[in-house]
Length: 544
Image 1: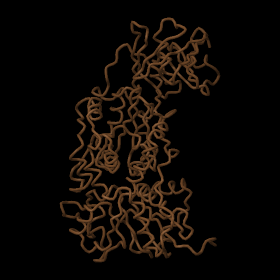
Image 2: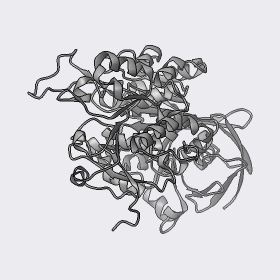
Image 3: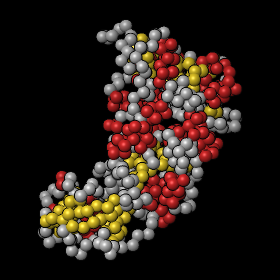
Image 4: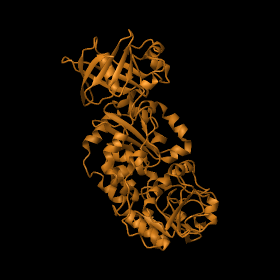
């Protein structure tokens, strides 16, 4: 039996993890209101329901079945999709956009199974096929983020115009409200102050980045020096749950070993986007939000026939440069970053919403009107994205790699200079791999590729991985010169003759940098200087 029985019941209809991301931005409009109870369900007709139950469990939500939802009465139902038997729900129905407005063309079949002939496509969510059933308008309230959508609706489905409500974009508002946490997000991702965070974003389907250019991830990581860049991947939830998280991690296993940050599909993507220095993407909502946040954007895929004309995504395709697959990638990336000017994507942002900062208030006003309740007296909330939800998939600490190819040497002034590239993706196609001379190999003692371990001049581990002691690990890798034990203070080198050297930097630096710098000395001095990327660090050497 329920403890609270005098509440208005709001049903969130969550078809997919992608729509969960959208609907979670609306949950705070009911913050602390004892008059309202939220319930959640996933329709049986959902195209990709996998992952929704896990999302519910992470948030502590106890969902009801779709059958129970259809058999019950609610005071309001809110969804970000048009599929399923939504019209059979006993509740006023409020539909919000699935992504960044209504921007995607989608081929849809008629009842007799034939494809639509309206240029082969309909705009998802904003045409007669999606909004009408037997001539009746399905939603009681259709939420739009921009007047551009209003004008399209008036042209294509005038019957539904009476249900349309301009209410802004809650996702963009929340991203902008989180901007002050940018450095926290970057720290959570392991991005150091002198590094550029490159985010690769892919929507789903065959014409997306991951569908049409899956090697981009390893090619980009292979080209970018590891101490100057970090690379993160944001993939559409349909990629995660259309194939399975296990399969996705397996496809990207070498990239993960090379330090790729694979961002979780719920909430973490927004914090990563705020933290980005540049975004390489496609026609998906995430890439468009990146432009709206005033980030430099490069397009690695952009199928124009999939994009509705006149929308913010269409405007992005007009303005953002295309990445040339037949040229080295790093110069193109650096050129876009160096040439970017603040406000360059203002036209894109202006088409995402024409009510910036007002989405939470307007969505709350609409929801409470449909509920027949007075709004709470307290201000509506737009909570920033939680840094603690930003826990990317990677090997070891964020941004670290399990193997490096290192080049460098000692200058006339004694300073050791280094440049490092992840070794796991170095076998990407020749165009992506820079030529390295006088290189040495640094590999984790538990790396799954024995060929890399056996070829390494330096093997490394953390203290908890020493097992029976350094002698065992040195014996298991007979061709290496030294074992580097990474500590909180720096690096402890175990030499083959049984001696040890403790390397302590005077500023924070990746301890593997210290090991490589030591390798380049014929005889270790009591003190030396190493430079990697923009970092110049003094290192003290003492007996271990």
